[in-house]
Image 1: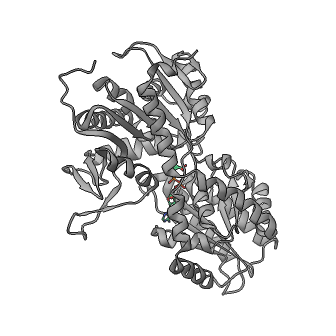
Image 2 (image 1 turned 30 degrees about the vertical axis):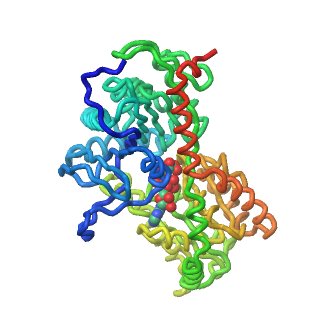
Image 3 (image 1 turned 90 degrees about the vertical axis):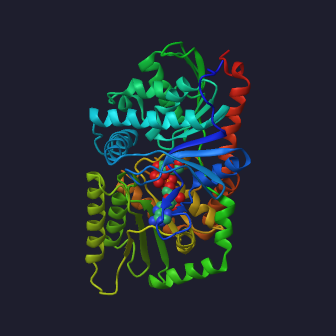
Length: 483
Ligand code: ADQ
């Protein structure tokens, strides 16, 4: 029985994420906020509008309190972060501890007790906000690695709620996860949820193995039995894969737009109309394998296996987490590599790598996807990688080839890609050449196969599946009792 002392809120559906789906825009004098369109918004906005929904998150502005506000029919409930929270909870524990730890320790994670304290404190703030806005028996959907303690905190405050959690990044193998000084707290935090979603089956399996190894709880299939304790009664938790996807119909619509098709042609002209345009689109992050990609491309040119007359690589890298040391290093390394490849050329007119350190609107991104014959996705580790799926969705003529790292979640769905191990530069080079030289019939066959997949696996289906499963668990708790 839910405690009657808690004043319930009005929202039947609550999304909780580190960031609200808005950016401050002082130029927009009407509201001061601009919606930042992303996959998650697309996925949950219809549910938010259909039910009395709310989104809890940070505005991106530190040290300022904001009142709840409504934008595009979504009720937003801001959580305040101080500059110190940003430093310790966000840049520190989330992005310099958890992010590298969960991505195979590509760079060494840093463990600082002050960062952990801030992580706990901020997670408590998010949980308190959920308890305040959620209506009785509401559904709460918590997102991503910044908020892994929120499920347990919410369950303690509001046992009446159905709590789902989705992890957008990988969940590491036990041997790596075990490094974390606060590993047990994180596992208990997540186990406050009724349903925990991961990108790949392997991520869910890694999580269940950590639960068995650290906490000694029994698991059967995807179900974890959590014994009573920590002020909570015994309960069952499901940990399962729910691979995220993209808004395919929207991208296909953009890819049909004559203005965008014209812009794609123009982009090809602007880079000198080469026979082959290759493209990379990533956040500037050490997990994305941009350095490895450039190394492979540079060697192929130097060895004359690719001809500078024939190919151009457009590398778009969105600025990301720029105050963190490891992000300064990756940017420096990428820029050095680009300069080196372009500097090796003898002809003043030869610029094989066109490097853009910017973010672009959706229309322009679509034009880039349409302009590219070969898409390079070479992440060293990536939860899913939406860029790979976006490229496929835009190729309405079933042309173009995708080079895809086997270390992305997307590799499990896009079987028509040229699969590569980006750590193996020789393999990466062979993959790039295979994509460049692939005959038209093979390209068409493989792209068709991949397009079929993204046509059915859309982000709205992803959120429907997740929420349906959560609903089902809530309505039939006995249905998940392991036989
Ligand atoms: P990210 O690490 O950010 O996401 P990704 O899945 O590729 O990686 O999503 C990036 C998004 O940003 C894509 O929609 C892409 O088009 C867009 N983008 C990238 N560069 C851009 C630019 N210069 N201008 C405009 N848009 C740009 C995390 C996980 C992933 C997981 C997603 C979703 O790391 O593994 O797929 O969440 O769960």
